[in-house]
Length: 512
Image 1 (cartoon, one colour):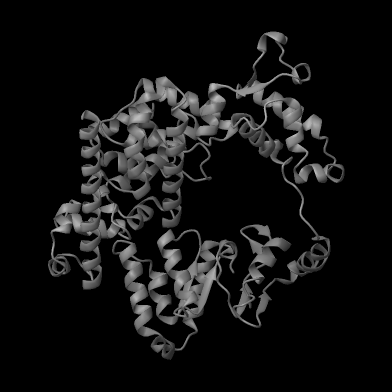
Image 2: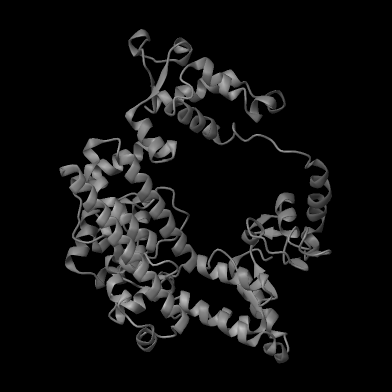
């Protein structure tokens, strides 16, 4: 385990520099196949470190890898094809990869000192029950960190005797969400029933120890939801204008239109109003000549911290067509501002930093709509390819949230029409022409692009193809894979035809 992603890659290179060349003979064929598969899922590219390390049975594993890369490396480690992984703490959670020996390269995770819970997660990879009988864990630490390390290992271990409820943490966000869901689903609607719900939680059992007053907490959360226009009181005429919760304890609560949309779209409570305003404003000047503006609309508000690469943004803008550049003007982002920022000069920004960051991410991900590979996009924008993939997943998820959010408002009908097919494109990170092929089980974006270039644009054209012909025109396509592609294409076509026959029969039956 290493404290950072770059350290993972450096340690992997360090390890193979000390390995004898005779180790290259171990699992040579399987490791060669693994390399070929990694190149294939990356649409022809692979980083130099993995190319050099995998023949020795070594690989790195961190969030900078794509999902396909991580899965292949994890499976290869479980199968014994890889015998050593250098990784960040992300490998310690949710992945069952037992090892004979675990080495913590440093008692830090990023810049933060290791916690006891993190140590238990990482050391737990060594000799896991049912996987191996024994295991070893080493921690490499500088002399200056030894005192803090001992305190963490022994003092915190003694105090780590149970778990506490976190419902009341983070400004009681979880309680507000619980109350909203309970009211929306009509599980509870009165003050007494909501209080009764809270009294059945772990927080209620630990209230005295955690110094929490459930009634006061409920009052605060209900008042927050009322003030945010998420819920309201049905008998609103019976209360005064100040709308204090103390005066309405006997009344019935219900969700507002905004509250219903928040639940339907699984939107963050604190962002509900911002999402509504964003969608309403975007409708006024929506540009649909290309997907860029719609992509910007679906960029989440809670993006990870990221440095905006103004130089890359300027380079990409200069390559764009006139209709694509119109989106920059629509966002009130002018050339002068971008050029000044690109060369490090001070420039006054017309839009907020949050808007600028979201638009930057939209332009970055727009490259994937033009059928560029994750590897090429990550390299151009100087971002980890796994990070690019995660961003795309977040955008697809937020687009789905917006779609369901918009269903509560008649004025948002354009989103209800536009987003379903757009979400499909986001899910597969691709253009419209590739979508039909992405329906084939197990097909990857890179393989679909190869088929498009070879002239196979539809399921029908692929179903009519001969496996031998596919092998000749598609690079590195095994016969078995070609046969499976043709078989699945035929099956999908038959299913579509059957659905159409059923629809036709239903129509005729209704007429008769």
